[in-house]
Length: 307
Image (tube, helix red, strand yellow):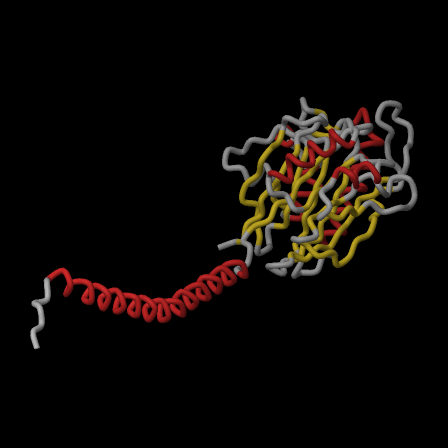
């Protein structure tokens, strides 16, 4: 029988088919083995992310903010947004008498407002905090002095309270006892650096309030850190004696402030964040927010874990 010779072109076609089949089988086998490897890699990556997320947060921010009376929600929301943008998760307000609905409406939904009901003055200095960062353990209104001043007339006004909150950090477990308060106006003789004895009633009220603050700090459990937010009405760099904020509060209690934590030692303001030095967390730095609707700057102090 006669067979015609096979042309090269006829041989190429079966060889191409066989090669394509082999490549297809190799690709399927490689994909089958590579898929578990990718899955393992993805699982490892997710594990690393979860581990990173579980790592303790090494810092938190505390702010003090005096919101002017009569401010509307839009203005308060702007100012509060400034300090929250500075990574504050706790804010101490001052002089917020009778404004609970407006202040509540000015805060993000994830935040809680501690503004207790009670006698006149109990709601003057509320505290707000981010519930996703802190867990509230206890709060109360502390009477700081029963006789105080009225700003312009000098007549006796209502009692002065501070709001106290015990907050535990959800990730680190670090617990703070935070107090927000407001000292009397016209306390400071900036020329002498000491008290303004022309307003003796206000100065004496401040001394009683300072004694109450010292008592709050001294009764703080050893494992908790005492933190204070204050419109102190004493210009820090002219507080030269022992009868105002430095002599009656920060030095006796060994508190550092947003001013003492500043390497440049700037301190011409009256708004303070104070923190206990003998703690795992210390004030590392601070930021001033001056473009505000209110007539006070917002101050955010960043507390960082000691190395």
